[in-house]
Image 1 (cartoon, rainbow, N blue to C red):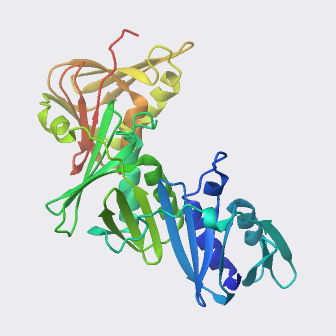
Image 2 (image 1 turned 90 degrees about the vertical axis):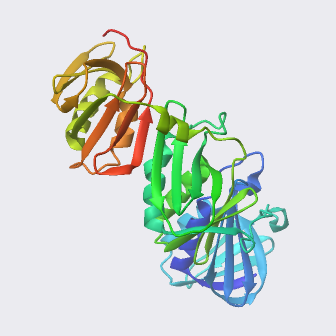
Image 3 (image 1 turned 60 degrees about the horizontal axis):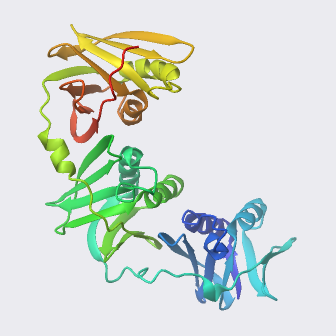
Amino acid sequence: MIVKVNRGEFLKKLRTVEKAVTENKIKPIISCVYLEVKDEKTLFFCGTNLELTITSTMECEAMEKGKVVFQPQLIDEYVKELSDDVILLKVEDSTLVIETGDSSSEFSLMDADEFPMLANRNSKEAKYCFTIPSKELLEIFEKVKFSAAISADNLSLNCLRLDVQGKVARFVSTDTYRLTYLVKEIETENEVEVSVPLNTVEAITKLLRSEDLKDINISVKENHIYFISDNTEMVSRTIELPYPNYGGILGTAQYNKKMIVKTDELMKVLKRIQIFVRSNIDSKYGAIFEFGDNFMHVRGVSSIAKIKEDLAINYTGDDLKISLNVKFLLEFLQNFDKESDVIIELKESNSSVRIASVDDENYIYVVMPLALKDM
């Protein structure tokens, strides 16, 4: 392989596919990036962790075809420090040589024929779902993914659920203690129900944060989902396990108490409370909330200190005492405009709590209470 590339574009593409690469000591080739000269003008990049595969291409000037597999971290650091606009990549004696006008370096290679190319990577036969601007997809992922189960031990919940029906896309995540639900109107005639692994969502989120991608076309094929933007393609396996009936969770609860408050005012109180309750041995992040007479009283304790906060609110309903996870509340509220009003609906001390913006019923949070203990 002998090819000339633009240094900046090469580094950009390398970092794009790196988002799918994770360290794997058992199978080191998974920790690598695959590079192939497809023709005289196209250089192909691929990174995978077997669950998620990211590919991309760039223009090049190829003198000799070939393919290589290498660990990307050192090459990334080295290429970033070069000053030449154009660099030469070539293979000599099973090593990758990178040359500029005044520099030459060599990097070890692995056997390119052993690199695991995902069988269903080709998206041509995939069923088109919908198209969404990359910035909107990034915002949705960041608003929903935080309440998914973190551990892969609970695989059916270690994901983000995407349900498309009737020109509406529903994005859902839950870890059984809380549930986040976001609705987005889209242009589509297709219906899809898939669970996207949380690791895939996290990797795509990082990519969308760092790269200025355009519209994302989302498609599905068998047990794979595709996110495609221009010459960059992200394909992930989906989780083929039943997902909880979130519609039942959202639709069955009947709330008879309600409070309305400014998001910023509530978050300031909760952030102060969190300082005291984050190391609470009996109930980590748990605080006691008391509602009534247009006031909210919050109490929190640690092993060496305690706090009580009062906040004026707009409250309707009977008095109520309930224990809630402060961290869970803040993780949802941080996605709101600080000047917006948030509405919190309650029923009993052992019943779920529903939270949404007064102005937006398309983004809902349901959180379960903690065991109520005196502080």
